[in-house]
Amino acid sequence: MKEETKQYVRQLVKASTVGFSVAFAIFIGVGIGFFLDTQFGTWPWLTIVFMIFGIVAGFKNYYRFAKKQQREEEGRKKYY
Image 1 (cartoon, helix red, strand yellow):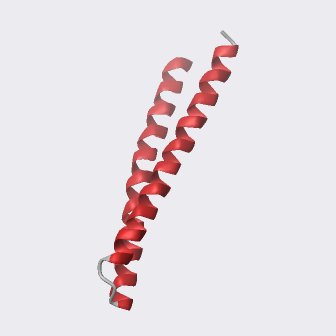
Image 2 (cartoon, rainbow, N blue to C red; image 1 turned 60 degrees about the vertical axis):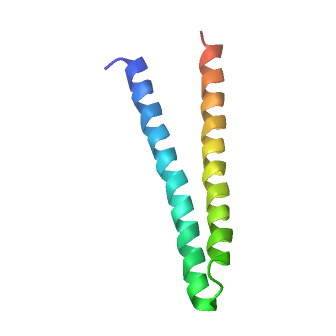
């Protein structure tokens, strides 16, 4: 396989894991919020708060991925 094709496949795999990371962060936040709401009887407030935390964490992961990809792309451009 060509090196360019290998690089493309690696980027594709990394991009797909970022999507799962965003989804899992949101689901984990909702799960924690739901659990705490059932323990304290505060439905739906903690679920909403932790869902927002999960969304923020998920997009923070996406931002880190995008910045890393940008740095890698700039590094490759230096050699061409």
